[in-house]
Each structure stands twice: as C-alpha cells, then as structure tokens.
Image (cartoon, rainbow, N blue to C red; front, side):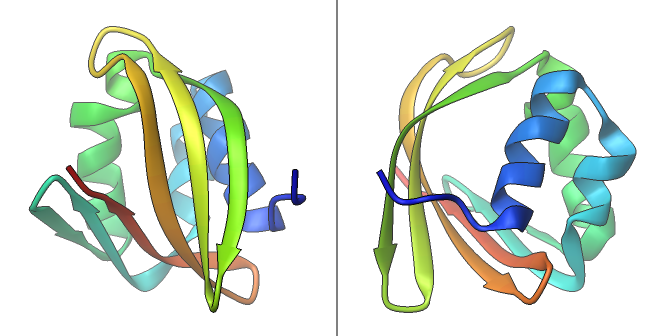
Length: 106
C-alpha cells in the first residue's frame, strides 16, 4: 500500500479522535468538498460537512487501500459510526500541506 500524504493522514487522524479544529484546518480556504452530489466550499463548508456527516456522526475510518491517480489520491476507507457505515473510496487532491479537493461519489 502507498503511504498517505500528510494532509490525508491528518484528515483520517482528526476524524478518528473527534478533533474538529484539526479536521477543518487541514482544508484549504477555497477547498471543494463533494459528498454524493452535495457540494461544500472552503473551511466553512468542511466544518458544515464535518458536523452533519463526519465527526458529528462519530465516524471512524480504517484505511483499506491507497492509490495515486495522476495528481489525485484515492483512499478506500471502512467507515463506522452513527452515519454512513461501509467501505467507500474518497478522492483527494492535495495542495502542499492541505486538502484542496475531496470527493465521495456514488
């Protein structure tokens, strides 16, 4: 398995320990988050999605796989918690030390 870039590892770790501030801080100011067609923008959008679908649902991620596809990373996670549960790929784009794009597609 390929090692995760630091910002994606921070995304996973912050989620698993329920650290909202670290989670939000790992996104760029103009980040694009998309979850099954619902779109969120910037750190305010990351905070909103986090509250409704991630830490707010006590999500916990276990990484099942990591692939690099050009400039993007596809991270397959097993998710448990009070919201979505199951395995899902998440696409990420990283801009230096932060996440600029995250997409969860059907």
